Length: 180
Image (cartoon, rainbow, N blue to C red):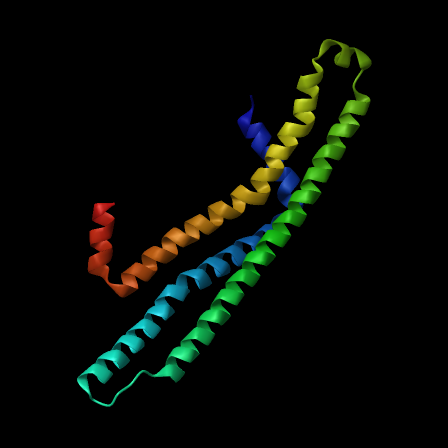
């Protein structure tokens, strides 16, 4: 009923974890950037492979540069390992923050229930009380654990892919955006 008040209280409950959210934000950005860079670097390997095949067909003596392609594969492996590591850190921190916040909410609810007069429980449906205790806290927990990270990752992915498209060809990017 009171959205502003509820959001204020939620942000107040999350304020002790603000630095954890900063680390999650940075880890999400780093993970997404490394995943976006991968195809661009892989494109260099494809180009080198294509040039080598054309060189062999033309008979210029230029073959496929497997050392260069191997270095790109090692670079790609490193990028994807870093992306996975940052993604893991992001998930680990968010799981810890979510568990602590959920514990605090449930503890506060248990304290409140213990202070409530018995006549409240006589006049209120058991399902309503259980719903407030479990569903609402679980919804906040699930939103913190999944949705927040997904929002950050999705926003960075859209911006990163757009930047990567612009570095490849601004004309094709413009055509794609006009089509979309």
